[in-house]
Length: 90
Image (cartoon, rainbow, N blue to C red; front, top):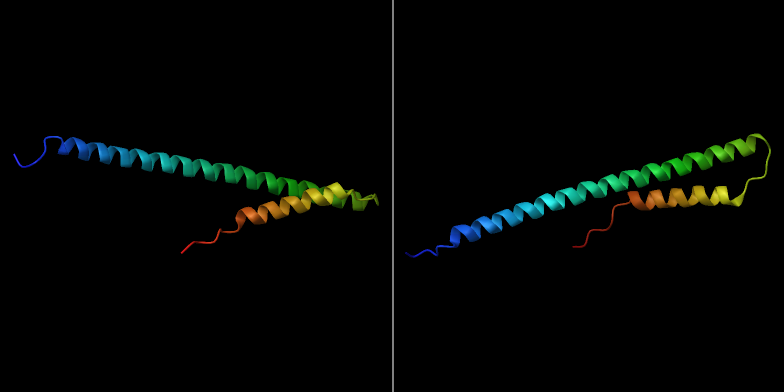
């Protein structure tokens, strides 16, 4: 017998662990995208609400609070940061 008796078992174990890690990686990646979608939707809602507030206050000739501008600007900046691709290391 030239071959080790545990060779098929070792091959099976390495195949199963690689498959399991691929499944786990796919699940984590899909969960990351789900969290990213929720964050993008939340930021878009913040932008829309703040824009509607600015329009409503301008329509009634009220003074515009600095907080409304700050919230809208922060949401736009956060959304732009999330959508920019990170640099690829070579």
